[in-house]
Image (cartoon, rainbow, N blue to C red; front, top):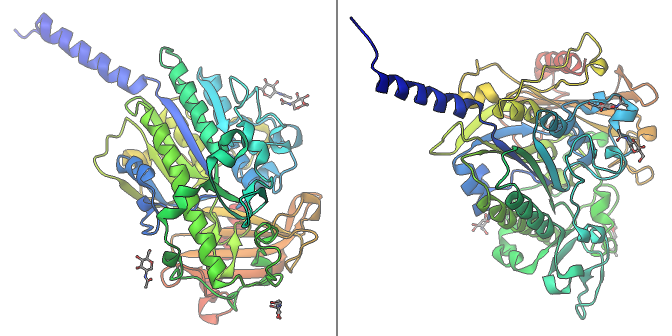
Length: 518
Ligand SMILES: *[C@@H]1O[C@H](CO)[C@@H](O)[C@H](O)[C@H]1NC(C)=O
Ligand SMILES: *[C@@H]1O[C@H](CO)[C@@H](O)[C@H](O)[C@H]1NC(C)=O
Ligand SMILES: *[C@@H]1O[C@H](CO)[C@@H](O)[C@H](O)[C@H]1NC(C)=O
Ligand SMILES: *[C@@H]1O[C@H](CO)[C@@H](O)[C@H](O)[C@H]1NC(C)=O
């Protein structure tokens, strides 16, 4: 006769309960967004970076090596990430429309968590402030409390850099290392945001309601205003031997070029006679910009360390990402505003207590920022959000995602499907212009859309006529075509689209791109 005696049965039940509790416990979720951060991190193999805190965080995390933004501009990228919809679905390519009133009342990532019982809170720049989030960062639908904005945010574009003569604060420089004591309120926006995030975390300690906290850093977005000491970690000479082009690559179509107008307009660049639109910026200035970018990254890494020290990583899912990349002289270009790998590729690092990793785990499949919404939902074990149904108008489905969950990959049960990333960038015309500003055209001025497909081996970009009045594109009206083979040319220097040898693959990618745009 077989029987289970009472103590082992109790033990079994206890183990089962612990197991279920672990599976169904609602983890807290922290999402950290860095503004304009390309993967200039030690964890991504960048030897110039000094990012000990992000690197340490990456130690127990999954590092997505090939993650891409949907558009290399803050508001479209963030609204896409936060609603799980492409810029083409939101009809947002600039800063000036709010999806709920313009397109559809779509559920956002934080809103979904809020509706599932989470307390949701945002510190700093998460939604792009202004019209694209209804001037409220989509409060109250997305957040349980009004968004925290640092009071020093108002000085972001103010002349508060010390000039070269007497340390008087009156310049709006691109490169602006400062002593905190000289700054308004003796602090900087990201320092304030992290202090508020820490205050928030303390306030939740005794509360059983799970939370979703989003922290948005303003740096390394220009201008490069950061505490001076971070500059000292980066000898300027380390940035002279940085491999990048001196001039625009010959095969690059003009429509692909972004003339980095925001860099030119700063007080330390506007008198330097940088020829419009193709430059170049001198070697010395180029090294200074790179140095300041890396110093800005080191500054926010330091603040990120303070945030991490306050988190209970046994109970918290953490996602760290950049909203899009930034060109540091590749193709002789600066800033974002393009469809190149350097403008679109971002860091994406995800950690969950569910997966205890002894070492960093590099993930090499192609991912999109669109994937973050369904992934975080799955990592929190909330009801999965459906994929938007393309045949039945996406606009009627209020809660869905155009991305895919990365949960199977994190779990190791992905079937190894080959993924692609789709991005886009608008232009007002064939040639770079100041008026309208071809780096960031307003919707009414958009005449051309560049769609860019990143596959395992290639980047294929097609610039076509776009009708802003009805958001349609004319695939037969082509303004530029680019094909880069990443096996030979990871820098995207050699546009192969005109070579007959690549005709077959080019046509194949064009069909795949048109199909992906839908
Ligand atoms: C949008 O959806 C939210 C809930 O998801 C609802 O509370 C709100 O009333 C809706 N707004 C409109 C204009 O339909
Ligand atoms: C957007 O802002 C307007 C004006 O402040 C307000 O009336 C409206 O309710 C807001 N929309 C949503 C969905 O919050
Ligand atoms: C180039 O820069 C790296 C920093 O990444 C530095 O270690 C190296 O010494 C530099 N090489 C030269 C020749 O300056
Ligand atoms: C300004 O730039 C133009 C074009 O690059 C060049 O021909 C001219 O000599 C420059 N002038 C000065 C003062 O540097």
